[in-house]
Length: 322
Image 1 (cartoon, rainbow, N blue to C red):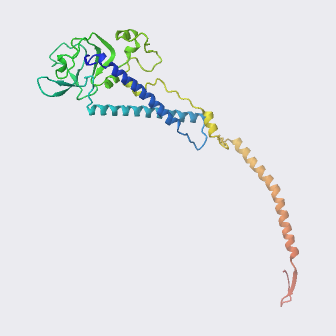
Image 2 (cartoon, rainbow, N blue to C red; image 1 turned 90 degrees about the vertical axis):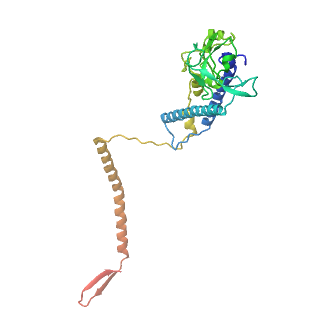
Image 3 (spheres, rainbow, N blue to C red; image 1 turned 45 degrees about the vertical axis):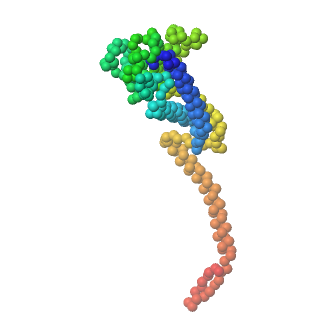
């Protein structure tokens, strides 16, 4: 692969599609892991909730799981990017760093790549009027990928500047090259692979079916791969909950409910009469029984008493019971 120029699509294509494969596999494993953890959780309620409350709670839990999963993937991806960049890993494709050896001088030294910023048309060979992105300072330096009919030449070793001069034979729409295959792939789009003519242009077999650019997709054709990956390549999340299964699992022994309504005059009169009628009925039963009880008690007390007659000094008589 070293015979291709660092701006050439053919130099980085294989590595980029290996990266894309890993991104898809990472998204799939992340989703499976998140779903397994989510389904292992239990929904515990102190009381059996209604269908509406149950479905609302499930939707909230699912949305929280989705948000957390996407955020975790984004943070891990940023961490990986920082580790790779700060470690100064040298790509074997000679696109971020490359070794220069002068036969007339002992030893070798490392030169870092510089990608042009802007369009393809760069005619000034002095390189003084144009800006370049330095791979030593940034890992996401990119440039439009194309097919070049020249390999690494004298201009390659001038301060590590990769110049698109002469212009490429053709360009690959949406695809970028850069310091690292991973970063350039994340900033690329897959728009070329929705078009049969573009696939033919870069020599893709007729057996490969172009991607379907259907109107139902929430992603546009020119959406960058980084956005697709941050959304885990998921078109839609489908939630399916079963209230009947939940209720059967949490079947209560008894159910009760309260019915609240505003009071009115007729209701108040009805309740008052009901209370009076109920009180009259109760007293009609209880009072006769109480009267009989106390009458018997009084008769018994009188029957047990023994009258005693005594005379005082004045000749008066006193009757009392003992």
